[in-house]
Image 1 (tube, one colour):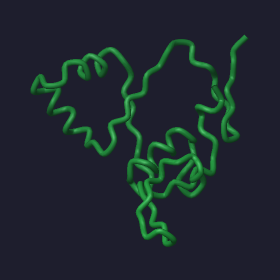
Image 2 (image 1 turned 90 degrees about the horizontal axis):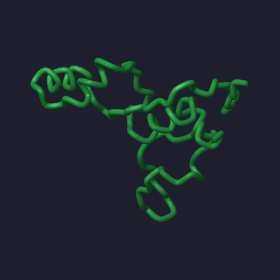
Image 3 (image 1 turned 120 degrees about the vertical axis):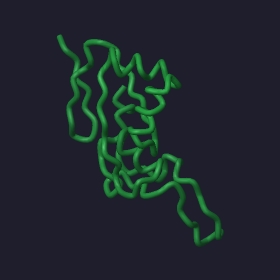
Length: 113
């Protein structure tokens, strides 16, 4: 019987075939097309020709950590809590990278596996 995985109130069917997601953070798709046309990215060209290509819009704010966690949780920054790459800690006066799980307010899809 098919297996479903549930995370953040959403149910996902177990894939029938393995899948790979390639996330190119902060990349304009036209740059990739130009590089492919110039012969600089033959592996990506093969993936585009033989695989499936989908584009996603950035969440706001458009920083690496909020976007990666939106992918991993299926939720926007207002829900998962990662609003930037860094936060300012007024107690220490330091910038702290928001990559510690203590900042995350929503479970990731990875926790379902």
